[in-house]
Image 1: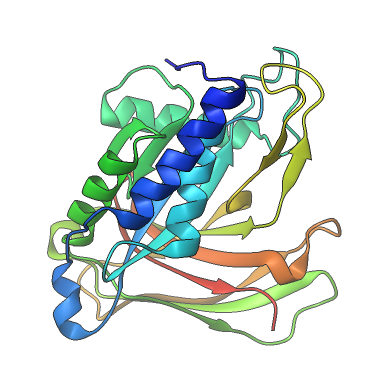
Image 2: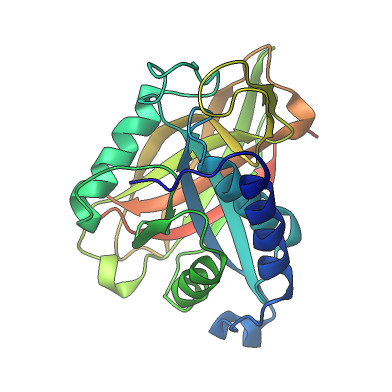
Length: 270
């Protein structure tokens, strides 16, 4: 499933998308009364080989940079799948791990057929990634659900090429007290782009939002506890990643239903 947009058409959609995100009315999360912003994880499954993906990449970038939805903290994860790589251009940011993650969502969310660009919000809802109005609506709805508090703090000094983070997860939402809930850590990098030489986007310089560099499970949260998870985690940083552009994202996700019930992000550089 994809709508092919090339050349000026793709550029026009990017411009209209950015305008829609920044200037359309938004809904307010109940967390506003507490003076906090409710985190919502927005995953975009995308590829540099897909000509309909750049407008969705631009939408995710706008959501992340402008934070246009009142009292909501949009946490972006841009995941480049690898099934486009045999069609003319090998996406340098692609990974089969992200493809596997998308396939897991397809089984739970019922769409049955992974596609690009696809947005998944808090593991609850999926839709075609370039729909700005739909994105705002779904993100606002997800912000009204109960979330566990997640905190990330610098840990002890790690070895060269590593970062140590201290992670704490508060009490799980009541609906998840008896479920297995996993704690995941992702590292994202902004400022990445590619001068595409082949494939559907040939001749275009593609810029990206928060590209996922790594994701791994770091533990399980315990239901019924005031502090459901706490611990330090070592993060390996590759030499070609720009440290000043890296963020650590911790999210709490049901093992079977894949709903995300808490998240936070923090810069890696300090």
